[in-house]
Length: 215
Ligand code: PCA
Image 1 (cartoon, rainbow, N blue to C red):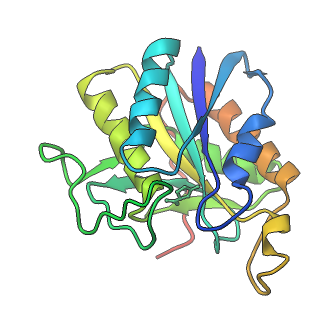
Image 2 (image 1 turned 120 degrees about the vertical axis):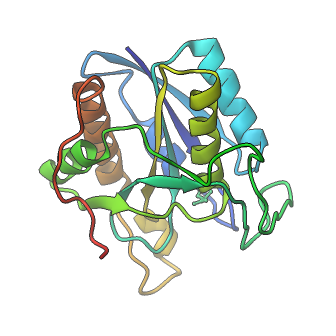
């Protein structure tokens, strides 16, 4: 089995993006699965095209895209991606779509096809805070999750796909008093635990446990 794990380049004036830093530090094999990694630009459409090229070139069975969600205090597995781009800030190419449908013939939303509850539980079991999130926002992270699930629905029926948001890493909040952060080693360990569970549950029903922290 082969899993593509992507991270993003830095955006919004940051020097680093913890998603790519964590992805770079993953082992090459997790729970018997080959781990392929890729850095995506924080750019609408371009990120989706590069992700599609990698899915085709590397013939992967699953894709987990990872991104930074500054302000969150734990690792979150996203449940849903919506068919909308609505950018608070310009992306890394200066594009700022507003209230823009991603795919005219696509559904309003796609649910993650990854075993998100099992992944949350696996992260918690290694001692790292994790929960399900019910919004991936409306910036490039929601965009890539929606686009990847759209590709899976239209071109790659075997492919399972989903998204994980991780907090700022500690170095990023030195100048942001009061903002939550996690150290990179913990985020990498949590990501690895989640991928371990992805392999265990790839062909199984996800766990039916409570995984959210919102009402
Ligand atoms: N986070 C952004 C895009 C890139 C990233 O790491 C987001 O949450 O949309």
